[in-house]
Image (tube, rainbow, N blue to C red; front, side):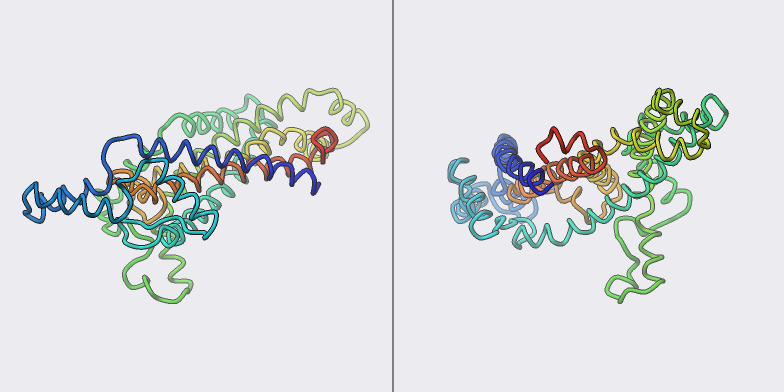
Length: 335
């Protein structure tokens, strides 16, 4: 198993390097940079003339190395990451990129993991329930829920909830994790309840999409597995229906969902990102969109690399789980 893990990690390193090159090139492709943003701010809000603003923008560009070729900027950025763990300096937030990531990534990952746990437990459970009652009204209702969860855009659900909260229920505290009185207060049960009251729409929307996918896949695979010959043999030996399903059918029906774990974390992150942008929560999503809009390249590149790394880590975890679940994977995968 250790060899299996080392091979997966070794193969992930060149993939991550290629992703860093492609990501940095795509981010730098549009015209303009943060110096152009400074120039526009000086003209529109500072009242400076175009010549004065352009001179300051050019000086800023030279000072921060934005005048160098893209290849040089990439080498400096990736070299700082490899040699010093330095992800660059955020020009908009006026602090190291590592600090920006450290502030926003943990809460984003926590939200994504909570959504993933809810989506997995509820989706798999509902999928088993629907498969065991095929063509019943329960199966029809759960299938309709699954269809809605996989087709309705998450940003649309977020907009609907924002409209209902603001215009129908007069909720004013949108765009934060806590109410003002709990912002710097120590953790307590009241603060936890306040946190749940602020983040439940993001959790509900991101969970709904993952739940729908898990339920649909689990139902379909379990129905196929229940018709397999070994399941009929287990029933013929006198095992109860519940024992046959849980001990024989469900573990084999879980294989596609285990492989889905390789992309579920990035999927949950993007689901959180879409809704967090609508709700303006201080997480990864608004930081990516905001940094792209103003040309804060190192923030954008670092967050995109983080998303790429979660995809790679998720695939490694999926490979390990599948190897533990199925001995054939260990045999033919080199574990």
